[in-house]
Image (cartoon, rainbow, N blue to C red; front, side):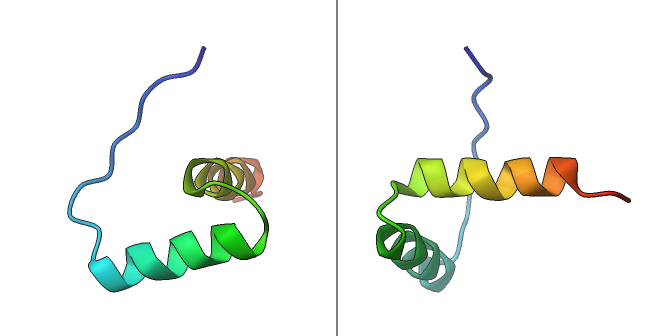
Amino acid sequence: MGSLVQIRNVPDDSHRVLKARAAARGESLNRYLLGLTAKEVDRTP
């Protein structure tokens, strides 16, 4: 099992946009954000 990461004080507009993008892909917000995180981790510096 992975670790819990919590992001506080996300602006409402940002939350709405991210949730809509996730829904457009048929994903939960959690799954969508995990995908974004994985891409960032794999990115070559």
